[in-house]
Structures are given as C-alpha cells and as structure tokens.
Length: 332
Image 1 (cartoon, rainbow, N blue to C red):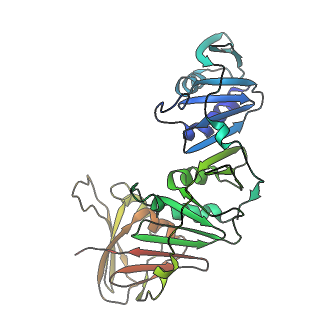
Image 2 (image 1 turned 180 degrees about the vertical axis):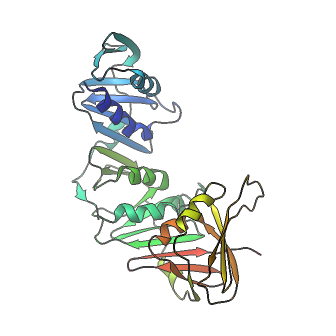
C-alpha cells in the first residue's frame, strides 16, 4: 500500500489517542479492515485507507515514527498473531501486534442518519470554544451548547451566542471544548446522533465521535438585555499587533482617550519575559478608559465587527446573527 496515504490517515486520527494507557489499547492505532481507529473515551476518530486490509492494534508512537523514517513509498503490512511486519524495499521491521481490537468502540457503533451541518457551524464553533471555561468543577461551562440554530458558550466572564443560518438537526447537546477544537481542525460537514452520550461528525475523509453532556444549559438571553453604553470603535489593522502580543500574553491592554489608543500586552502576574506596545489614532469619543480583554477572542471578533458598546462593566459586540458580551478587566 501507499505509505503516504497511511501516514496521512494516522495523522488524522492521532488526536483521539490517550496520553497514557488508561485502558488497554488507549495509546494504540486500531485497524479494522480498511479503517484505522483511535479512542480515548472522550473522542474517537476513524478513517478509511485505500489498500489497507488489517485487523488488530499496534502501539501508535512506534508505528508512526517508523513509517516516517522509511524512504520507500510502497510498503507491505503483514500481520501475525503477535507481530506486524513492515516491508519496504530492502527494509524489514516488526512491531508488537495484538490481533484483537479491545477498544470499547462498540459503545459508539450505533450511528443515526447523517445530516448536513449549517455552513456557518464551524465559524460559530471557533468563537464559542474560546469562551469556554477550564474549571472542571463547573462542567457545563467547559462545553459549547448546541440547540437547534443556536451555538453558545460562556465561562461566566464572557458570553457568545450565534444564531445559525439553519438548524442543527439533532437533539440539543453540550459539546466539551477540547472535542470542539478537533472538529474545527477537521472542518466537519455532517452530523448524526449516536447511542447514549455520543454524537458523530463527518468530514471529507474521516469520522469523529464525541462524548457529550446531557444537562440543561442556563438561559443566556437575559444577560444581553438592557446593556447600554458609549460607542467604541477599534482602529483597522490591529491583527498584526495582536499577533505580536500573543507571544507574551493572552490579555491585551487597551488604553484610550479621544486622541490616542495604545494597544499593549498585559501580564498581571509580573512574570512576562517581554512586552509589545503600539499606538493608533483614537476613534473614541467618550471618557478615557483602560481595560484588558482576551487577545485571541478580540482577533476573532474584530474580523466580524470593529465597533461595540462599552460601559464601566461590560463590552458588547453585536452582528446580524451573533452577540459577544464580556466583563471588562478594568486596569487602573
């Protein structure tokens, strides 16, 4: 078979490998016929590979590294009960092999009818995932909420809500942020309901199955009501400055009066090894203000709208089908 096709498939399924052997074959590539599969109890990824016909499991790290070192483009894979032989030209190698797949993939093998995802699903997911919390004591806030044509997420400090052009044709679910990040990379196009607490997505070549939470999400709409303030406009061309700031900090400091806006990196712990500062002509007409905001989120939002409402507590961006609300990190 073609080595590059196999390597590409292994690269695709790698994100669902476990970091350690929490259960048998959690750090292995599993092969079933023409598919390669990985599973870590949070997500499972599978992809078909042309020319592959193999059943069993092999340690992922060693197989991936070995294939990357082979110069031959065409290789042979020969499985015995306890060894996978790899032949390419004059090179022969063997890796320990288990001819039985022991991953609990039967728990996710029931897949409903595939439905097309809304075309703006990935765009909405990319911003929402950046609003999720890392606090595992509040699991709901570590997830993106998908409910019909609504995608939303919050960490209790920032909140994003997007109304999709069409509905996601499944029951509502809570998708963990780490799983959502993999869906964004894969540019998924279809969705299907699964068995138990699983939901399935499909890209052009692969399938990713995600464990979901089935809890009620708080009503977010009430937080957007009665937010008023002064209009605040960010200058154009900030992306390059914000890219430099991300080298040193995940928080950008905005210092603004009606003449000058200063954009700089900010580290409230005092441990930064560097800093960036750049000045722009101010478009602000209100009282002078200094605040901090997450730099990566600001980059994503400014690609959609550069004008917001601001007051002493909140910053609110809105578009035709989305809203982003953030508590300001006021800096004295």
